[in-house]
Length: 79
Image 1 (cartoon, rainbow, N blue to C red):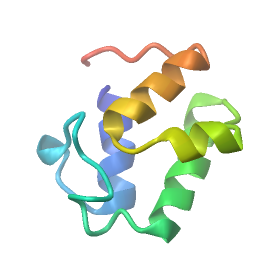
Image 2 (image 1 turned 180 degrees about the vertical axis):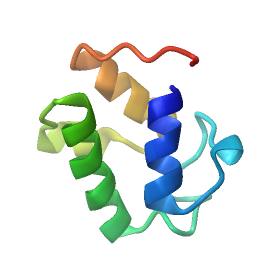
Image 3 (image 1 turned 135 degrees about the horizontal axis):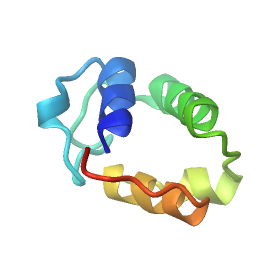
């Protein structure tokens, strides 16, 4: 989870300690369409996965993002 939080923090320009499963575009002003695309490409590069359009559309918050990564075989730890 630490790597994911670092990515989210850097892309969205928010503090890591403010990121939770409920962090979403609805409560994070910097999570706009441009940063959403940047998140997708950064996560694909970092975790060596390729998201489908369905994966991308289904992500509504950090919890969904973690579930999508899990479906691609990425297991996030609390570290």
